[in-house]
Length: 416
Image (tube, rainbow, N blue to C red; front, top):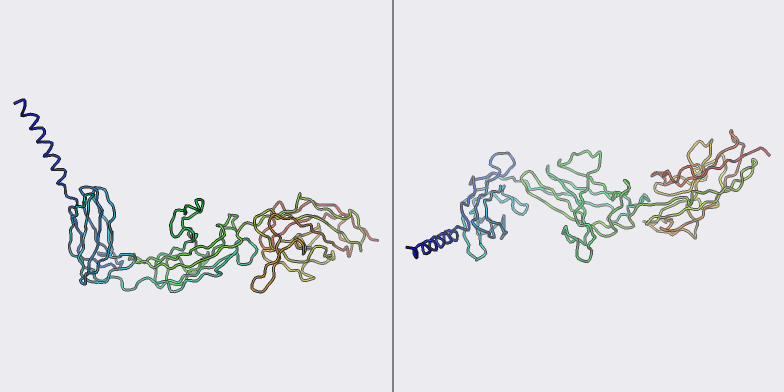
């Protein structure tokens, strides 16, 4: 009897092990209901796929039409043991299955190569007949320079939808090759797709049928560093209420991107005299430093130009230019802000760039230029003495606090 007990225990263990090994790889495979009408009307738009795995396995779920064509919803995907439920609305790889009768198959293969499957019938009827289509997708300009020089600073992306649908437009560096992970040779590259927002004030609300406009300035207007220079993939993805998807891509190149940074060096302005007579000329000298990583655009007049006190930059034709940097001189009784303005460098300081046949002038990054100019005192001003000061103006953008009202000097002006 003592010898029988171990034998019984051993037999029991073997039976338990055999029972565990006999657990089915796949069980209770089903599609319910067996008819769907995927048209987003809220009635039988989807079916519930249910299956149970007795142990770890690779799972495939596909539908087969009358001609034998297979449409894979899942293809050899690893799954741990467990109970699985997922909704299926008739869309595979972004496209809706055509109306008709299909055989569904759920197939599971465990680590030993043992395969079990279940199958049944699914009917698709009354499906959405109008697939999503992006009828227009344009990027202008294809190369842009987000550096606040008002030349190709903003890119406009237009996307036209043939029906109501969700729309997502993203930007991703082409070096990422479609992956969210950076390549081994570029470990610091940001590869997560960056979503772009629709232009504020657009006539159409997000998701409506029709033309949608996106504007992108790389964040420079808000003081953010733009993405690194290079080529980017722009992706427009629309998805309708049924789940059908259309995706289009194009490329966009970012060049000379960066936040412009410049100041009047040492916050110092040297004026030629502290006392003048009507008819004399007040001269100044200061230094502009571009301490940023991008060139700053400028416009005339060149240093050395002399204005009349009762004039301004518009009189000789040096009107404001959006995005241009200029040195300005202002004084107490001036009727406009910084009426006298000069370029931030001379011919030996500036570099040129020709864009669409027009030449533009830039002070290079990490460089300095000495600026001089004059103001002829054409009449005695209503106040005496006057304070004169300098400023560094980024026209139609800003006058930074550090560059505003720089180094005021009291100047006396008398009649001869």
